[in-house]
Structure formats: structure tokens, C-alpha cells
Image (cartoon, rainbow, N blue to C red; front, side, top):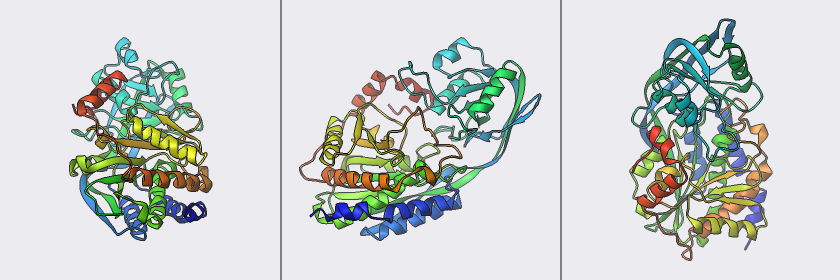
Length: 433
């Protein structure tokens, strides 16, 4: 009865697919590499599912050119933030520390190049996304934006700007390492710097990968991840591991198909890193009322303890805790909202959904969104152990004995207001209510 557990703990399916993805190297949204990775994922799912296919859609294309930050003493190392506009600016430089909303209120940054850190202080009550800090800078009239990593190691961070309505940002934006940022702040605060970005901007295509398994029911459980990654690294943690997990769970569920009372629909999205574009496209073209729940893998395998963000759906938290207890495996449940991965285009309209990641030390993304997001930092044992839990959870979610009520949009909006997330979503153009 439980042979699937031993098979999953010795399976190479997920890890082999992870190696396939990282070896593509450039999986940036809209590139041939993203397409290659999507096709490989489709073929991997087709080995275990009844049907697998690609669904293409248009996106705003952006491919990296050159970028520079020039000081009176010479150039410093930097990278452009995806969907930064091409352009150059010479203006006084301002180090705005963490870049909290109050920092922008208290400091005149109009016409200046402003630098903010990628983290927030321990005492601050919520996470501030990069795009929120960027659009505070834009709203305050900044001429350029510098995003400073808080993680040591000479690692400039990447991450997109832009909104759904205006995919290309308003002012040139770059990322610099913690060390370069410290040098800029020490030597050049208040002095003129030159910032420049060039990029190839035009039309492009991306694609979502679909596959289905189980009975032909009106209701579905979505098991999801994203295939794309930033072009500066292998994208092993973000999010090759999540897509490898989808493939491994599909393999395990195929062996347990008789246990599924509800259809499981796997979707590996394209273009997540440039504004959740693939999942927004899918959510807009799907009957959301027919989705029982979304089980989204983004950030798994980075640590042994699975972390479940449940967005106020207590029943989902109870289910995750029950499965963790059953296998004596560490899990943590965060009931708050997390509007920053591919579950969100469904959850924002009241669809119950998880964001499944893993707990790691330190604040923010760690190695993610840097050159250091590489395969060597992951452990096959963690993938296998977590695949066992997530397979069991998927079976539970697909059971006739499990139910979870959708929320109203008003309830979701109210919880976002209560958690002080609404302001940031409004300034980034992500507030749909």
C-alpha cells in the first residue's frame, strides 16, 4: 500500500529534471531557453499524465544589454533590473537606506538617483517588495533607481520592475551588491553619478505547460510552479526546484491515480519573474469557481522544513500540519497573505491556495535572484522527502472528504488591508479591487 513512499524516496525523476532545467542556463521569459525548458517539462509530464500540452501567450519582451553606474573614480559592477527602460541619467546620488515609505516622505529624491536596500529592518511589520520601493521612488520623482543587495558575497540582485498596464518601468533601474552599495554610500552620497541601461525591448511569446491526471471531474486541484528564471544564473532554487517537484509529484500521483477523487491539473507557468504574467493569463481564461485549491511550489527544496503560506484559509493550514505530523516531518504554516507568486492571480479572487516554499536562515531571497542561485546548494534528499509530503497532501486535497470554501473578494481585500499590504499593492498597480 505504501510502496509509493519508498519509490519516491529513491526516485531520480525530479532531480534529473532539475538538472535538465539548470543546464538550459538562460530561461528568461520570452527567450528560446524558456521555450526549451517548457518543452522539456511538457515531455517529462507526458511520461506520467494522460495529456500534456503548451499554451502560448504574448508578453512584453526584454533582453539584457549593457548597464553601468559611473562614479568620479570609475565604474562599479552592476546589473540592470529586468523591464528597466533603456536610458541614461546623470544626477545627485542619495542613499535612502531601507527605502521605507517614511524614508521617501522625509527625503527629497526628486531628480536624483536613489539607492535602497533589498531587506527591511527587523522591527518593521511587513516585507516591502522591490517593486514597491521602485514605485515609491518613481512617485517621488527619482531619476534613477539602485537596488542594493543585503546579502554578502559581491552579488548584485536582479528582479523586474514594471506593472501589468505598463510592463516597462519609468526610470532606469539597476542592482548592485551589498559591497558596491556600501562603497557608493560611503564615498558618493550627495555627489553626481551616471547610471545607464540598455535593453532589447519588443514583442515576445511565452507559454504555460499543462498536464492532467485523475478522474474527469468538473472541479480541479491545481499543482503549479514556474519554469522561467532570471538570465544571470541557473535558477536552481528559483524555480527549477519547484518545477522539478511538480514532475516528481506527477510521477508519484500517477502510481496513486486510483486514490484521486478529483482531477489534478498541473500547470508550470511561464513569465513569472516579469509580473506573474503566465498565471495571470491562465487565471483570466479559466473558470476559477471550478478550482478547489491551488498548490503552488515556489522556493521548495532550499531547506528541509516546508513552509506553507495559506492566505487566511485555515483548513489549508490544518491539512498541511496533519500531513507533516503523519510523516513526522517539519512544516510551518503562515496564515498571512503572500501576493508574490503564481498562486496569487487565483487567491486574489478568493480561490483557496497555498504558496509552498521552505524555511531558510536570513531575510529575503538569500541566494535567489543572484548569480549564486545554483544547483550545488540543493540536496536531492530534501526534494525526495518533500515530494512524499506534497504527494500525500495533493491526494488529500483531491479527496471527496476534503472541502474548502472560496472566499469573497471583499474578504481578501479586507485581509490585505488588515495586514498593511494594500498600500504597496496600490502603488505597484497590483490592487484589483
